[in-house]
Image (cartoon, rainbow, N blue to C red; front, side, top):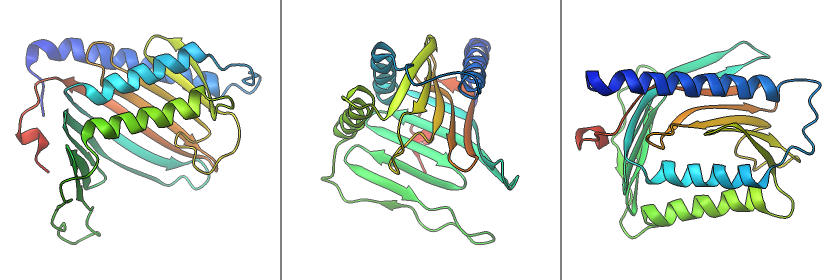
Length: 222
């Protein structure tokens, strides 16, 4: 999954830019003397929802790394992280497993236990929710969380394309932990890096190192 030599330089610059914004956002959300109770910006929430919608409807392959680590125990796990998307098909590789969608059919390839061969991939039956319907459902959920009368998260956009989220009140269903930073590539619309911090000091980080828009059938094979 290597980009062509020409576009790669530009892509690396974009990814480096997003990584810088992500680091800046995380540094700010950790500032102990920063009062976040009045930080919510509805315009930023709208921009995040628009960026999310664009990222789900764009065509791209992102390659990078995923890491989950604990500040308490020091334990960490890591793997390559690859997303190949050409709606209505999407494939996500992480931690030895694959999940995805072929329009109205879900695809799951479970990660094998250590030392064992991977189990066969499972393609769900047709007739389920379509890719576009799934995107609309995600967007409805984001609107309810971020734009309702009692937002679950406050949202700031300190730099274009990079958003900071802070949990406004406890909720076990909160999908972005207690605080998060989400960045999107302004050229392709693809996710360009995420950092999610959960209660108890567990942090999940995706660093994107390459983005390309020429998606082949091979990229979408599990």
